[in-house]
Image (cartoon, rainbow, N blue to C red; front, side, top):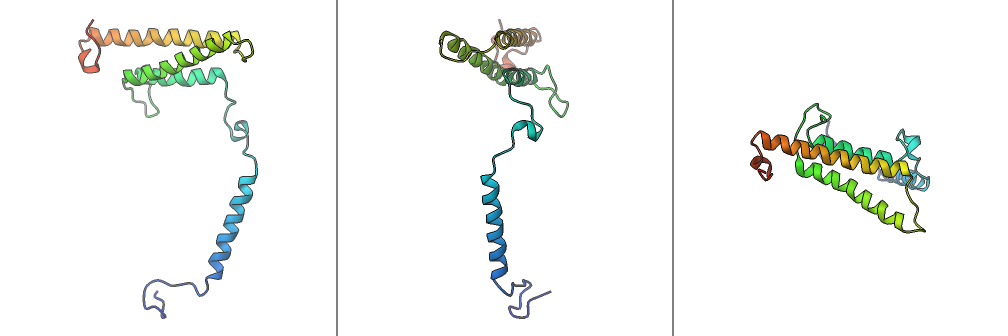
Length: 149
């Protein structure tokens, strides 16, 4: 269907007022929505963030990169540098919490949270050592940039 006024296949609106009103109404809805406070994570179906959930997130990513846990598609891969990166995030968390424990005015983590961080870090360091030793035993150290001994 073509517009008889322009002779093209594009039909132009008769008035600019309609789209201007719609755009203004849309802008008003966005402005009003921005003024409303965002719903808390729990209201959006997300768990409340905790130290345990943060450590678990880093640990799960490290296990995924070590090939010890499948990705969402069910595949496993080995990314030692990526695994080390996630383990270093736990080390950073450990360093920060140790630093804060020395500061009397700083809020400190519970003993359970500290134990979780330390235990998870030790476990992951053990697992990465195990994977590296397996790679060496299979004679694939050079392929992954690992020293042979």
